[in-house]
Length: 214
Image (cartoon, rainbow, N blue to C red):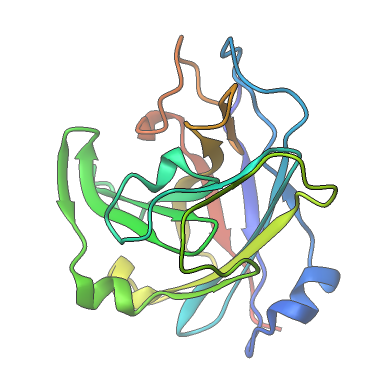
């Protein structure tokens, strides 16, 4: 399995409602041979960037809508969840950004699964999140005719510690998952060669290239 590569288009003033129809979507469809996971889940993402932030529009459908975690830095990966893991330098440090269906965030700077430093509440507040679902209470919907959901996130470059320039190369992966779905699902954009689901494997990150300014 070869790692994937994509070029992120530059959009000076991103508007997710326009980007959703005008920019190319990339599928999160690698099942990686992991057994016991749910069939029929479809997920994708649409990335773009400007001088201030990286915008990602995630879409998921074909699975129950689950949200039991209503706090940042909680186990949002158990809910209906999408994720972006990114490495900006060759120092081995990456950041995992995990978002549940309501936009609650789990994010840390890491060297591996067990070596992590959580982003502060002030840093998380810098991440713009626009979910299509809103609720003040936990929920599980497993029989909706329309089970699609979208979340748009804007991640400031200041959190990533870089100044974006055309041609800048990042390494990372995009994921969709839910531990609490029955059966669960674990999908990735760039393939991961492990016997069990494990997103914390930067050696399998794909290449993310910032595109030219128009």
